[in-house]
Length: 352
Image: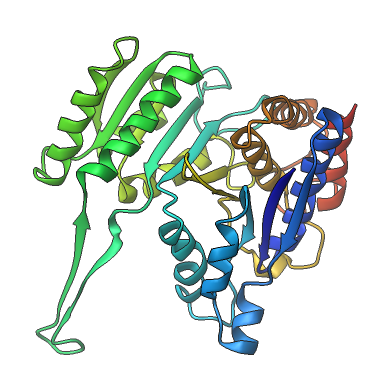
């Protein structure tokens, strides 16, 4: 019996969460496991009504679950950053979800802006350190609001934080068992302190994994090679800031935000899964948004829970639907099907 916390969130979040859990439920019925959900109303509406973003009691409850599913965060009437920092980032930091996992996989039948590349060339995973770096929030202002203002934001890297992220990436590369190649994306030629630590740890941990080939790519070169030769990558490991950037590029080369799913993991504890798209408030309640990213995030949640059969069923169902050509366009309102109909099709395929 798994306990799943649901945070549908804002905008189209509840709609895609509904379809993701519809498919998750189909996988549970097919493969024979049970689960319970508890839904939380954290998001813009609650904040506007009560002033509360995320109470400490909720974090305590999250720690008792097996996984968290987040639909989307962002409300047009709430200042940007309040909800994102107060819900998403706070959950990452408080629960020590130190791995952000982003598969970059082009499915058959999905258009990519990269000429002459297909599913065989675009299939890799980005492992992003998720709780340190520039996102640690260390810094401040001097003479704020004046002509002499100074703004400081420090990049924090600890040996522990870097090593556990790098070690996770090596283990994932071995488990994935494809090219068995791990690339460190850094900027060691300029960030000579922080990324010297990353390189030293990468080399030291890599010595324990003789079966894994390793290489290095500066972040600017990584963005070039992701476009020119995405087939060069199997698994990429990188720091928080660079991971934030290259994962969005990854989403574009795999067909757009409507496909891209992510996980925020603590391998020894709870994990949180989400589509990487925003709340798209103008589509709220229209039943027009593409739910595939959320459904794929539910597939990642299955895999994290150890339900590999169910995860495989979801991935194949998504792949088969996209390859079928039935969906006219992955953009909202142009799919040829409603949000719920897409969820129904994938759920039925999982169940069959």
